[in-house]
Length: 162
Image 1 (cartoon, rainbow, N blue to C red):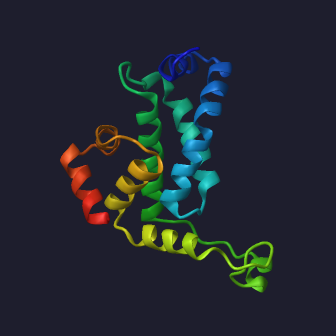
Image 2: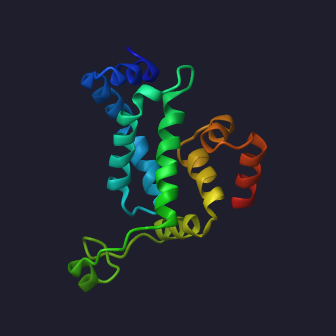
């Protein structure tokens, strides 16, 4: 079985099957990361743009790096850009008529609301650390590499976020 790093090199050479394997392996973790980082808005657009950038930049992938680190760095940069200037929120007339109730008419879970509200209240730097460390179970070293900060900064941001 080919490693992610071998697959991205094959993608750079135009191998569509290699891209399909990478996409299968990383679609769910990428989607979950973007959803948590953005509070669940514009996830599909940001995920699609991440994959487009992966393919376009595949020939610039640095051998010796981990593909997952590169993938999350690209997604994080896109999500940060989105946070700086989010697109206007579309209005769904049906949802507005239902109010805040869910699809089945039941109110959303209080725990889900609290987690989403707490994450949304964090400064961007702390949010990135919490999402990568706790929701994606990445080590402090990998989080530091993705964010381009020292490991001590990751620990400090995590401590202040909690």
